[in-house]
Amino acid sequence: MMDRSITLILLTLGGIGATYVWRAVGVIFATKITTDSPVFLWVTVVSYAMLGGLIARMIVMPIGPLVEVSLTVRLLSFATGLACFFLTGKRIFPGVIIGVGLFIALQYFYPQI
Amino acid sequence: MTRQRARVGMIVDPSEVSRLACRDAISFPAFTLLFSMIGFGSLVHQSDLPLLMAVALTAGIWGLPGQLTLVEMHVAGASLFFVVLGVALANARFLPMVVSFMPLMPSRSSNVASRFVLAQMLSINSWAAGLRRFPDITPELRRRYYVLFGVICMGSGVLGTVIGFVTVKLVPHEIALGLIFMNPLFFAVLLAGVTSRSAVTALLVGAPLGLFFHAIAPDLDLLLTGAVGGTLAFLIDRRGRSKAL
Image (cartoon, rainbow over all chains, first blue to last red; front, side, top):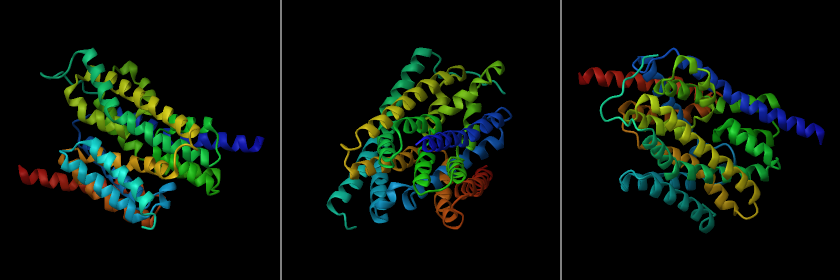
């Protein structure tokens, strides 16, 4: 029991530290950059590229419990949500609610797909 | 640090900035965080890990992909070293995000230390909100916007984690999965709203590269996507600009 607590504490602190290192290094780099430099634009597009890649991965090749749900359901719900977002004049609420609603409904009513 | 001057039309009233931050945070990000962290809290409970750990992970890591990686790898039996490495790689986006965000929020040079605290509150939500709102807010008040927005988001994220953990038996599994799915979908529509051409290019280049690199080098996928995709988008954008001139 004691061993398990220590493992979990180390795991938690390790996970927090591993994430915070990126933030701290970011703060140090940021002091050397001005908003009008090309490096600043580059770092901004690098962020966008990583976020684009991350979202694609979370949908198509997820880590964690979403693996249980088929790729078809994930893609269909994602595409529907995104389509609703654009069709409603870029409103976030309908996009997210309809996408997530479809995702849940498909699991209930069509568990085979 | 170049001191940006307030332009005409920028918001200079502190209470107006506070109202804007609260409205922007509560209008959607706070709810999405509440719900996606409910999904996370219930996952932690199902993985047989304690509530305190769930809360510490939400507030301490403050990035769902890394949090999911930690729980998933630990449950799969990976050793401490590899779990920590996995979390670090899943959250590498915070480096470019912090670098591209902090200079927008200038501070007195005596105050640089506080940025190490501010950086902890950065998430996709506050990053996207700041990039969208900051041009309309006088530089001196951007910090106020960011802190208020961040505190509301973090508060609802922690609250969601607790709710998800405690009510795990009440939330049907399909809905808990739906709440986790909400996270990438919300990120996608949040970012799909950007209008800057370089950002759109980077998102569209990054998405397929993310899958490609995940297939060939799953550990380094996001770092490679950022470096290769970001540079590619940067060059495409520059070419477009020089042609336009």
